[in-house]
Amino acid sequence: MTVYDFTVKDGNGKDVLLRSYEGKVLLIVNTATGCGFTPQYAGLQRLYEDYQGRGLEILDFPCNQFAGQAPGTDIEIDSFCTSNYHTTFPRFAKVEVNGKNTSPLYRFLKAAQPGVLGSQRIKWNFTKFLVDKAGTVVARYGPDKKPEAIEAGIVGLL
Image 1 (cartoon, rainbow, N blue to C red):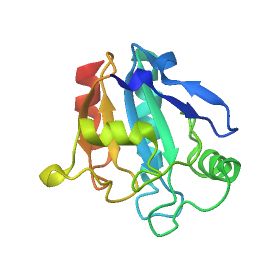
Image 2 (cartoon, rainbow, N blue to C red):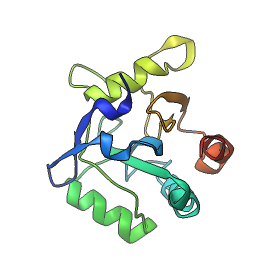
Image 3 (tube, rainbow, N blue to C red):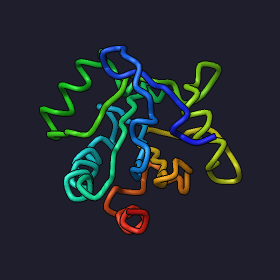
Image 4 (cartoon, one colour):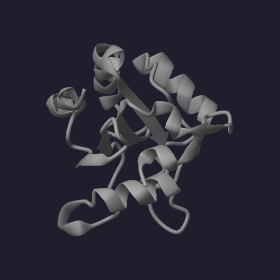
């Protein structure tokens, strides 16, 4: 099984086959608009601008499970991100990353790359998963790891 075996919802509730990203390097991030890490959107956008032409896709999954820091509708979240951080990478419908309603994609990501001491819980917003061109999850980065700090890992996969 790979990341490409999953279907997710876009911000309008339509199904998106992740297979459509096959052959790309993916950075999958659970985000929030009201978090101390929200300024990472700027770094994510810079990575996207610098490397999309070489095969990078950043997939943004808003999540409101951490202190309610992603309030609003999917449309409101998209508007906030495009207005404040000029993001152009794909943004999907809100997901749950922990608990009984965890999105199947996130269940897969966490199992493929557990956190510290083997924990499969996502600890906070802006946890990042790096996926190679074959759809294999190759790295997990905590929220404190800024986008620019993982650039070399992305470039190595491109």
